[in-house]
Length: 268
Image 1: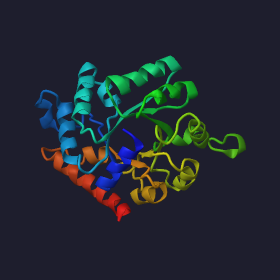
Image 2: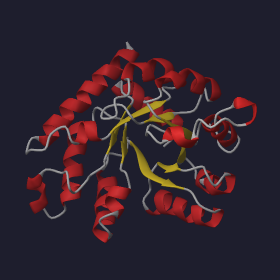
Image 3: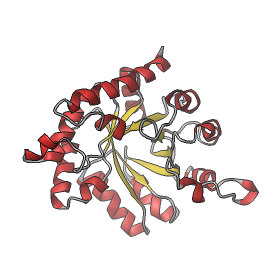
């Protein structure tokens, strides 16, 4: 998917919403466990309930890998079920020496045909660039994450006092461009969005941490949006586990609609 196509969906739906499909077998409603493929059935109902409200879906690969071959099958069926106008993110956080990264890229971009994959930048340029070689595919690079441990390394001063996350962003922008490179920036750091937009004015940002982690939706939109939308705001647990009974999909829809309505004000 191209940047223009993604922006078109954002405008059409008045939404930056990305739904995280973190389908935890231990948390899905119990009545689904009697179905042939509980994970896929759960995802299918979530997608049916939210597809008109969101522009992207982000399966976290760990929840599927943990189930072995059956998990990969559920993931493939889920990806095939997601409507083609939605942007798809393999939240895999891959990144290794160049030849290995090339195989990770083939796995997610050719074998599974995701639009994007999250990539860890710690090993540097040769671990990231193989993902950038695919037409109309995206790297979503970890920059300033939403978890508590982000304070351990990401703010460490570099030369000139520049924090590590800023050095990562500036360096990565010499490898890719706004048509194929996004950054992960957590909503739990709202005070940093103005600075981040000064660093990367044109790139899309994938923003976790709104919802269960308590990030401020309005603050993210006010300081993180750009003239091409520029945001994919993710909610996983806050939407998909909004209910745990037979009406779970209805409750997920209500949670997604509440977020989308909060986003729609940006388009008035």
